[in-house]
Image 1: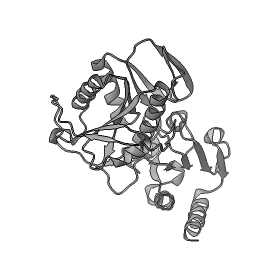
Image 2: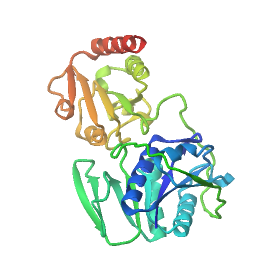
Image 3: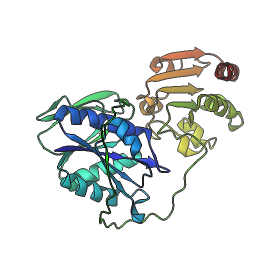
Image 4: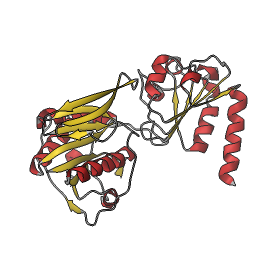
Length: 318
């Protein structure tokens, strides 16, 4: 038996969430006395995976597999999982992972667990702890199926190096048809993505207009952070909808989330609840966000943010 992990890449580089998936897979493989197998598509250098305990890599490099295609990728995962007798297939909770996981589980006749936040509590039967209700509650799910597909919640396990003695790299040309065709992909290349960011700086209507957004961008630039916004800001057209975070936008699971001028509507809080440390800056001490935040500053953002940015710049240059 083996544990199989899907390694997601971006611009031929391994995404941070996939290193967490590899670390998680290694822990399960150790608990079961199994080998850890990684499947990736179009990865130029697989050597990094050996630092995270991967025993074997299947690097798919056919022209049709350069761009993500859930139908084709799931067919490939199932073929390799069958060949390697995998009892666990692990994906991340990225947009692609959430799409790929259920399709793969259906084809592999496996149980699918989403939003898993820790190692299995038992293996016979398999019991996992999952977040639910937009991270406001937890669920213990049990399956007697001997084949499991699960998606690991971002930033829930951590990244741990465990160098492997040897790593075997196999280039496999897997025959896999699909009715879907990727015509083109448009990506923002000049900014840190919200999904992969360790730090996210978000702004709300308290900034009073798009002309003041440079405050958010300057602070994010110093911190190496992604920028985000509340729903009202994107609805007003101040920022693109791609930056909207919350229950109806993108979920955030960063190590640090800084909210500037965001009141903290329940829908917004639901989407950022997985962030480990939450900081709010608002001139209204009664803003709901203060009840959910780990740290809060009651003050005028137009005074606090420039001062904070200046101090951080000086600290970096020291």
